[in-house]
Amino acid sequence: MRQFFKFVLATLVGLFLFMFLGFLLVLGIAGVVSSSGDTVTISEGSVLEIKLSQPITERSPQDPLAELGFGGVFGAQGIGLDEIKASIKKAKADDNIKGIFLNLDLLQAGMASVEEIRNALLDFKKSKKFVVAYSELSTEKAYYLASVADRFYLNPQGTLEFNGLSSEVMFFKGTLEKLDLQPYIFKVGEYKSAVEPFLLDKMSDPSREQTQSFLNSLNNFMLQKISQARKKSFAEVKNISDSMLVHNADDALRLGLVTHLGYYDEATDFMKTKAGVKKDKELKLVNLGTYRKAADPEKPEGSSSNKIAVIYASGDIVTGEGGNESIGGKGMSEAIRKARLDKNVKAVVLRINSPGGSSLASDVIWREVMLTKKVKPIIASMSDVAASGGYYIAMACDTIVAHPTTITGSIGVFGMLVNSENFLKNKLGITTDRVNTGKFSDIPTVTRAMTPYEKMHIQREVDRIYEDFTTKAAQSRNMPVAELKKVASGRVWSGLEAKERGLVDVLGSLEDAIAIAARKAKLKEGDYRLRQLPVQKSFMQTLLSDTETQLKTYSMQKELGPLFPYYQQYKQVMQMQGVQARMPFELEIQ
Image 1 (cartoon, rainbow, N blue to C red):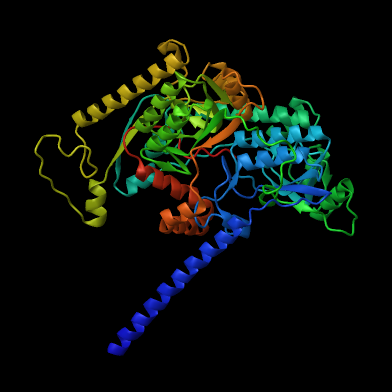
Image 2: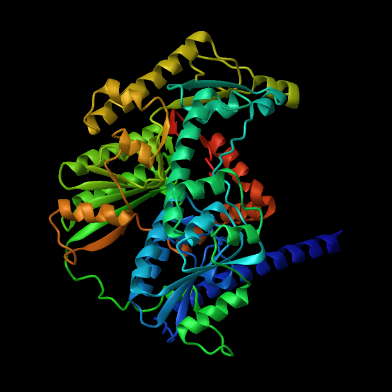
């Protein structure tokens, strides 16, 4: 027996040493990669390759392992929209870059992010350099991006999805019934459909109406842009889409949606000719990670002490500090306060990409926006989504800038509790009992049914928060509360629809918002620098903060694959605290 324990102990010690040495190895690799950030030299006749196979985030994650192919192991994986646009802008002025190669298949990005990249490519083309796209399986969004290319090579056996947009919602009413879980829903607004998955088994009529409306708005905008790029009439392009006339690559070529059917080598051979590279030589493709380290041929930002703070608010709105993937009420307030108190910061741009979240945290952030507005310009720049709580933190800004394809509005609130008494008793054999000092001492509780009085009390609080939300929104938008409520009631709008209804001021990009901020602060171009807030956690900080959780998330993502978003949705439901101001769960536009 003693020998047995001896072997067990030795094994445990060995495993511990192995894990420790592995951890040190990861740190060493990360250190080497991080320290290799010296400026790289770009060879003449190079082509910038933009390969968008990872999710597009607002800012590039601080992950040096991504360059080694292990991105996402210790934190969020993705490619920053800021990095993509900066690289395209730099390539425009770089004489060594002869063109851009869009290597596209499954594009994981919101509609507004795609629009910003597309506009950056259109600006790049003003340099008279080429843009070539290649795809084997082109999704609707990927094609929209690639439609600006001078040449679009679709694999002869490939497919091009061009049949309009759709949005699918999962409903959990049947699941809750099978588990003996009874949801209590408290909401304001007939269009506030975030709670419908727990009450219904299909979309309500108001939910279907609003979804159909903003999908049509987004789809028509996209088709108009495609028709311009492909030099076709809008009616022709819309008919191709609505009738699903594209079934294979030959159809895409015949209908003029792509310029060529060809393989990867044919696309690269064409680019060799354009870049002045001999056919027997290899095309010099430079990826985004490498090009990030290349020197910028344009003049660097001036040395002026004047700054415009660009504050990124990305993710769910939660109480507390938040993180790189969430907006913490405390953390975001501190970032805005820091910009407000910094005398060198002359204006603020609040970049929002959020479906909302905690109404309390949203109000905490709103307060800091109001205080900043009194002393310096603050402009809201809406990205893919700025809805519900995301709209709450934007509405107090001096000017709201949204993309035509932004999803916004959803001015409404809800609360939810789940009575798990029958689930615990019937499924697990668990019962509960309690002793109270007062009649309502155990509120809120999830282990017994709620009384009518308790439900009335919570609904009254939800109503109060909605009245506060709509009153503040009406004041910010300079319209009567009654008029504001006509476009509120939890309804979701596209950026185009929101502007028509006075919920946003300007249709444009982040750069447009920065230009407006500079103009309001009376700053000329070149007379200021940009400062990004909040400061992202470094790779080492992320690694040391919660390695276990990061490894678990990474493993779950690899294991569940396409089902991972539903796991994330489940986690979001479990983590909800207090009254929520958020839009429908995981709105996915395909």
